Length: 174
Image (cartoon, rainbow, N blue to C red; front, top):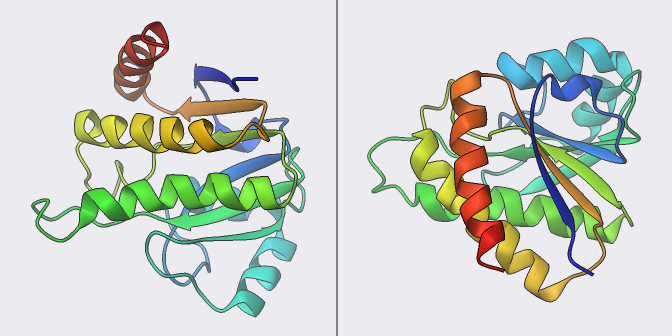
């Protein structure tokens, strides 16, 4: 069975799914944007668990409970800071999405919501990023049927429009 893919405009901290993905920094100790919002709304338990994990390399993923959030888990992943696409950013972004999905599969997560990783403060161009996202999701779904629903929660109208356009093209080619 193919996972249902949804593109939504909204706030990822409001998602009632098994897991939400946090666009974290390497320390996992909170920051701005999505990361800060998840830590604020999720409460102290997320920070305490992240301290025990001890950080996360770019492109990898770690998991904690979701504290006061409506989801069960938070998968923390670190996307690349965009320079000029000569620093392996594309592969690192791909890994952030793919490894988050693999970790979700390991924890028997059936529904997951992603933000647009690395496209905010880390400066990854949204039009380039979404192509990497589509490829990572497609590659994961070729080999796994474990996840039933994958959501992309976009905070801005522009990001929502870009994701909607690219995913509609992808889904129409299936």
